[in-house]
Amino acid sequence: VNCGALTETLLETELFGHVRGAFTGATENKRGIFEEASGGTVFLDEVSEMSPALQVKVLRTVEEQEVRRIGSNDVVKVDVRIIAASNRNLAECVAEGKFRQDLYYRLRVIEIDIPPLRDRPEDIPLLVEHFLKKNGGERGHAFSVSPLVLSSLMSYAWPGNVRELENALESAVALNRTGMIVPEDLPDKVRAETREVKRLEDFYSELPSLDEVEKRYLTHVLKV
Image (cartoon, one colour):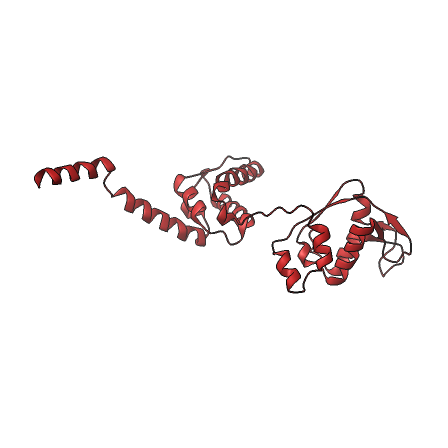
């Protein structure tokens, strides 16, 4: 469940369900996601976007293992494992009063910190391969990237993380007609990084090799 993509009312209905007549348009009973997932797992994405009122209800579900549908006085026992994710630092949200401390500690049993993409560039080649295969499969064509493009992708900071990388590759595939992604296919921001990488490559390519440096040094010493 993407908690940031739904309004508070819709999200409450999705999570807890409702009974017929609970509100205008509620023409039948509806089981919420917590009920539907009983015995399994609920993934709450962007959990920091929940309103304070909804956080209270989720806390009750976590602690009491029960839900009450909107408009009903009856409680339903549920047994769910909850995985929560956020692109914000929840500890900071708690300190700022934007996220309930009790809910934070109830959810934070095992914490997995995933660094931003800029701090793990070694993951980029695998992600590039995955997204190219995905987009190529949708178009019935195989795609690859040139070494210069891959160097650029690994050098770019990716403020939008993996979503931005996926979007950049999807855009590149849409513009490409040869199957080989070149710098001209990349978004402008990433293309600027490509020009910088190319400039550095040209600079280092003009430098002498270590053997040549050693030869020049020995020649200089002998002359002295």
